[in-house]
Image (cartoon, rainbow, N blue to C red; front, side, top):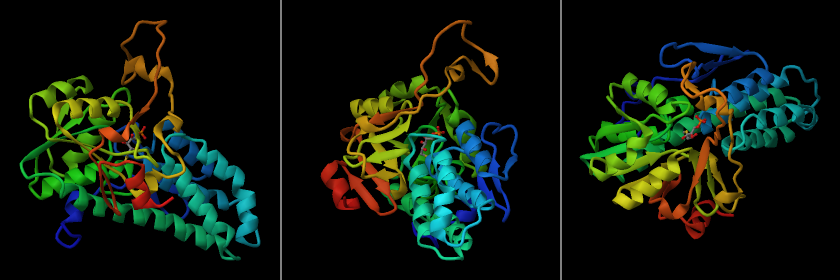
Length: 353
Ligand SMILES: CSC[C@@H](O)[C@@H](O)C(=O)COP(=O)(O)O
């Protein structure tokens, strides 16, 4: 697949993040698939709240939203140059950065914004606005490239299982793992797409299924608990997932449940692919046990769609990410290329450090 041969407009119409010039509009992912509407954010605090509440979610998307959040924060800052502005904007940077801990794209985007800001002159407002736009544009381009690279690994006639939502909704557009799947379907390599529900927030059932339907792709929804049974049946050849942070040794943090998919995949001879932009690679974190795993409100486990399903008074533990050790990963796909059987040496070769 190359960019001219692929009809991106047909397969890639959803945009979760819109910059209007004076506000940030976020497609409200708490309400999908039954309500398709945008929330308007006029301040960096509103953007941080939206990231925390999962109005906008997915590793690349929260980095992009935070970059625009900083542009909004800049509206109330008076500074002669970028260095002065950076000092005054530090509390906003810290506040945005604290919204979610696991996806490194958030810290990465804010660090990148800060870096250009400190060396900017009196035009620092234009500089950070251009940088936020560049972060979004580069993410879209990276996803399209990953789609081509990842799909090429999949034998024609394969079926795939994916987890969480890694599509346009989770990125600037096209998606990471879902971009690979979009490209694989378009090329006739993938026949059937299975999507796990992804409890408790149901990113798979609510978002991935809806998103694929927009493209005319008919996914098959499964309960998360059906994944091993599906693999044992021989009906899937690849598990394709995204990532929230990829460590220097190739360990991968992603949505809770990914680790058990990787274990089951290895047991059943199913291949396991991680697709993520290089902005998700964190060469400063040596291995997965050093990643801060976000734990969310246990209340997310007590019911579905506002209807209580668990008895009153029960306790719950709600970690929302897990770490897949690198030796369970067959391929990491970034826009820079494919790393097969990732480990510290292969990661160093690809990303330096
Ligand atoms: C391109 S998205 C990759 C990951 O961010 C995705 O798999 C995921 O785990 C998202 O988690 P979420 O809690 O919905 O933000």
